[in-house]
Length: 123
Image (tube, rainbow, N blue to C red; front, side, top):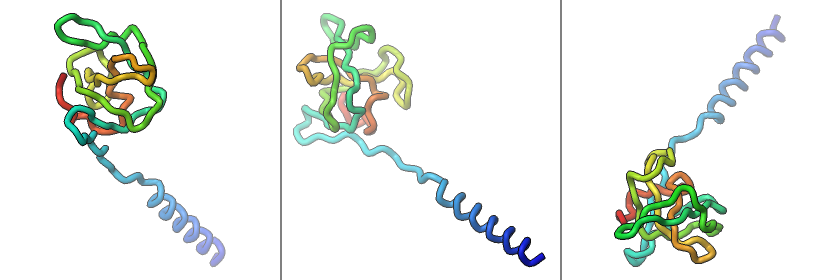
């Protein structure tokens, strides 16, 4: 009888211990940052697509054309553009203007960026 009680207590202790370890802590993403108010640095997904640009008077992302990739992390961005093609995430229509690693100007989806992009100025 004592063995069964001991085994039950050990099992309960392990379950409580695992429960405490399994619970993730809530963390807010740190914001993008700048040193010169021109280039805003953000942590991003390595290899993320950079999409082309459409528009004459104002540049908008072209969600159908990939012009390059961004392998650096963090990467720098000029500005953000809201109200564009759907990308999902906390800013479902936000894109950020940047230059891909091949030098092509374009936009990256906000969902490819880990940092909070609210500090980046509007285009």
